[in-house]
Length: 257
Image (tube, rainbow, N blue to C red):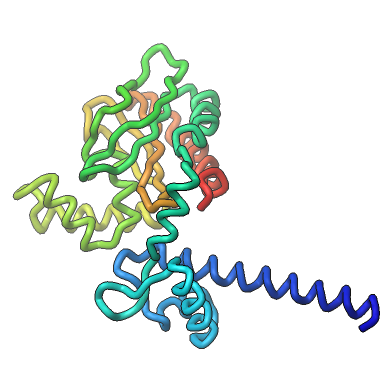
């Protein structure tokens, strides 16, 4: 084989290897969005690959325990080796996102909160206080509900409808009646479309907020929110939403999604 042919062969192998990795990553990301697993046909549809190609990729991922058969017996879900890798990485969401929170607080002058979904509540895990004299400030460790807060509703929008209704009923009991659930699901549909959630004097009178949500590499649901006194929020609403949505675009690179 000539030197030129050897170089071309090596380049082809490298490009082929990169393509295989990219396709395997696409399969894993597709599975990440479904707790109950996906069939080969569903995976193929989501990643835009032939079913036979998906079958080969899934078989290889199964050999490495990155994918396992779903407990329902139909389809596949993420495997235990992924969780082990995530644990080994020791990724700290708070440390990773702190510069982004600081930037948002500097841009807007408002307090910026980071929360994680735990036990059916949003738990504040970090906060950067705003520069305004009158500002909304909560404490790290405080727990907030899901159905009437911007961060809570943003996290709900990442779940399937059955899980949303289950969490709402667990939180509100009999108050989560058919009428309430219909209104909530309509709002969730709007949040999914816009990418952000609003709390307009719902949780605390006189305080409004905008929030966005994302999942980290472990699948945990986090939310970043910007609360403010309602009068000032109404004046600056468009700017606060725009700043938060710009920040949202940076999150995948920060948290390794």
